[in-house]
Amino acid sequence: MSETAAKIREVADGVVEVFLPLPMKPTIINVWLVRAGATWTLIDTGMHTGDSRATFAAALAEIGIAATDVTRIVCTHHHIDHFGTSAPYQQLTHADVYLHPLETERVTAMASTLGEGTDFMRQHGVPDAPPGRQLPPPSLAFGTVYCPATPNHLLGDEDEIPLGDGRTLEVIWTPGHTPGHCCLLLRPDGVLFVGDHLLPKITPHVGLHPGGSENPLGDFLASHAKLLRYESRLVCPAHGGVYEDHHRRARQLIDFHRVRKLDMLELCRRRAYTAYEIALEAFAISPDNRFQVMAATSETLAHLELLRREGRILRDESDGRIRFRAR
Ligand SMILES: [Zn+2]
Image: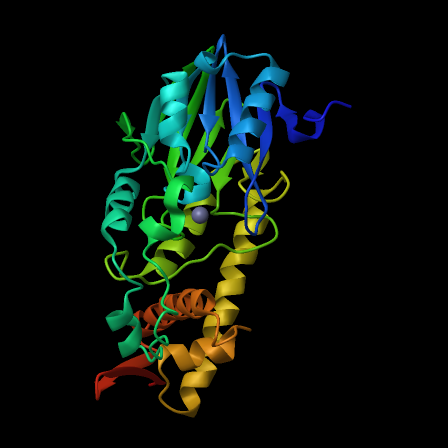
């Protein structure tokens, strides 16, 4: 077997999975090449590392296509592993880049985010980081691994992108993990590309962030309910293996968050808690791991906000701290 033999797999006629390395967990992102006549569409790009670019180049060579045969780059959302190489690949292939407008907003917001959002986190109970231990702003943390393109086209819910040769990609807007996350349904084949929305083994981060959606978990669950209205034959996730029956997995994820939400409601019955205190109870995180603390607190807030909208908990503010208690 050649060195690159394990890095691609044709999962359906003219649909090729390319396994690209990531320098963190999960360690692989699946990107997809979809053939339509003589042209190809790339779904998601991987992170901009030398390793990822070399693997992608080897995959193109193994399939036997030139970079310029890729005429469209459609990205599910703006995160570094999905959109990180979009600018270099736009240059390399001259392809048109597609992204949802709420994602282009996040790209712009990320570039100007200065700190770790301390004021927002402080009012939710997160202790200040010791000097020098604050998380760096995204622009510094990501450096050269994030090279976002300026999209040529903005994705809209239920748009149909004609690929040629009778194939189209239908856009299904699925906010939750990010505000403008989109799944893509290849017709007539029934191949559903789900980005991070419907992963087979893990559930993606869904967090409440300043400037983001006001009810991200509500959005995420509604997006799962929406996908139940679609049929698919094969599901292609960004992390983990391809699978069938996205309805089953969507119901599992809806149930998973229902249980987690009820666990948090139980805690709020004992006394008033800050989101940070609930996060420490609900997630197995270390208070010293700043990244984990931020992620778990914003994920907890997404659950608490949904509970509050359901009228099951109250939000009190005193002494600059926000606490939640059951009604
Ligand atoms: Zn993501």
